[in-house]
Image (tube, rainbow, N blue to C red; front, side):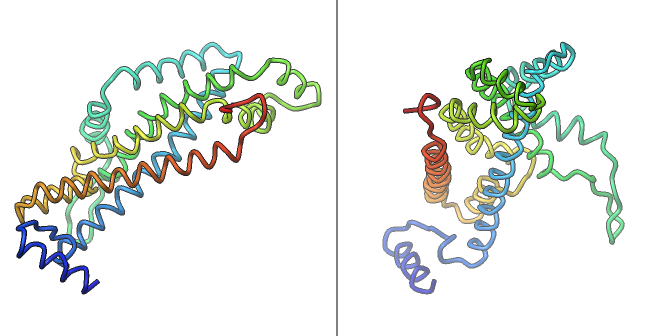
Length: 249
């Protein structure tokens, strides 16, 4: 670490490029804390949005008109409104209605934090697209497959979990990959409600040290790295699930 710090100090003295997060301990700590918040927010919202998509697609397949109407309304609402507006709605509108608690020094704080509201907003936003993605995968499964499972004694829910869903994953993974990549990039909107993720912390750093260009390049490279890791994992998953007749060739 000392060699890295010395290199970037020398770079600053010779070129004027100030990558303070590599040689200033204070900037380094707060930036990497922001990086970890971004990774945690992205990973958790990916998992929750997948769960929403799976459950929503299952509810759409049930012969209950009220449930289908409810899911379709949710999808239409979250697909047709900007994610930043949704985040503001959750944080400012619903957040103002949630109860508060008094901490040890007598300050009232909301029971639901800004991080939690960002997670909820991002999960519901991406989940709406995942519902449609999983629905397309479920509808691609031949009806005869479901009927064969039911003939063997599977309930509708068990057939969905053990047969339909694994096959549907193989069909919809490419579209799912695109939506999850978009979700990773959308996590930057958490900046708007004060979540200390990478963009928020980077803004603080360049306001203090006036190194906007350097920090923007660091952000660009780190988001490329995060998205690249997700794409690599999704492609590995796609190859492991590949089955003749289903999914990508």
